[in-house]
Image (cartoon, rainbow, N blue to C red; front, side, top):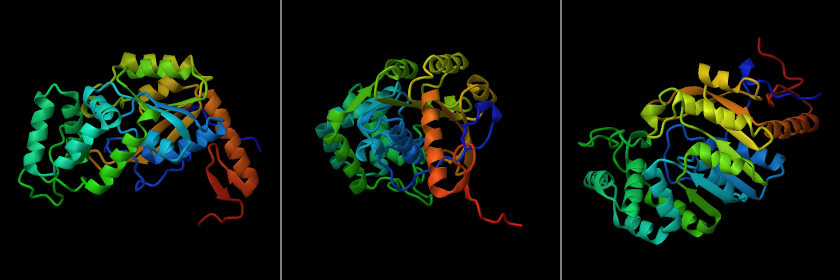
Length: 324
């Protein structure tokens, strides 16, 4: 049986397998981070014949997927782009100036006094390395990793969790050393996200994962939230590059459904922690090339497993009784 990826307009739920939240490669905590999609993106790259190629995130943020793909040998090169100057300062410092970054990391401990000092640095310093480290420190010690989220536990440290709760120095150092050791395989850019996407969509042996700022609440989560026209311009760019290998994820809104009607895709559940622990429904959109590769994967799994398979691999055993 041929499997067809539904149209975004159908608003069907699609079965996207999520990776473990415990296997986090990024040193950053990020609202709406998509590292749980790492295994799925790995499947898409392999099915598209792109294993060993370049992986690009025009709106990188925490770049959790990128780092896991590099670590696991799926991508030989990753491109981390972010227009936010402090996010960029972190990635540029940690990747391209690791000695100075690690010296700062080793010299400080997560305390309230240090939190106040780093907050002052990010507000006042013009030094990119100092700002990059300050962003990292505040990201690890603020609630939900949000820049203006306030320190974990409060200034009086009366909360259940303390300032150091998300600052495991041993684990974080390992992640920072990984960046230092793989700097030759990582390009760090400070471009507009749509320009970065346009730059790489036409390149051979390249997969682009686009995760732009949310339409709803984007301005409260991101420094560089997009206007409605910018969201429309991005959709136009992707429409012109339907033959490229890419995947897009968005919050599920009337605007995003309107913009991507006619593209293969659907809805999937995603749990994220910024402001709450609720499970949100997001929209996944695929290029024609990626959709075709995914269809082949699902058809092959159906043949191998002898299962009934829904529009995007929503499998259930053929002989499994439905609950009464």
